[in-house]
Image 1: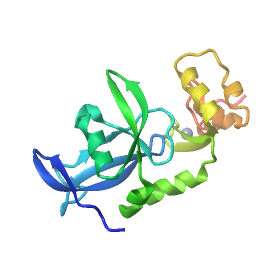
Image 2: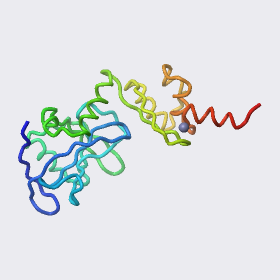
Image 3: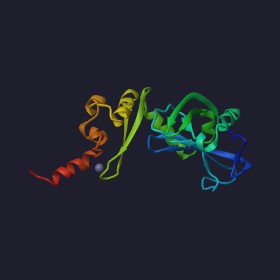
Image 4: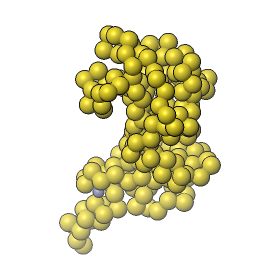
Length: 201
Ligand SMILES: [Zn+2]
């Protein structure tokens, strides 16, 4: 697919711009950048138009950083055939971020290693599943877990203090995986075992 000619105000001037899909490792969600055509991802005026939020994400959807880009960017994206606002909005801090579904054909036209990787991750997910990625506080290694959307929603409440038991939220996970997710623990199985090894009976 040939790339569309997009004009946008970037670096204080109306420029021919190119889109550049990225992903957020935090939850393997989609992100989007824009840079001056002919320039690259290291463009000093690189504009990240999305933000990473800890909320459920549908495929090819991202939350637009209207706080940084202004509300008009939604209309601009739609007018240029880049996708459609879903109507969902998420409050985070003092801002409200609208969710936008990018057009898959358009994204394929901009395919780069990031979007290819994003699609591979999406293929691993079932209909009602999402990624929950946590890193071990000891070894800093990241552990991507695939969980049901329902369990993920419960887990978000648990993190805010809801009185659930971790084994009730994730009955299908191993103790080692739950240890990584438990409030105040966040330690992987290996590190947990190593710590116990330091204190033999
Ligand atoms: Zn560890």
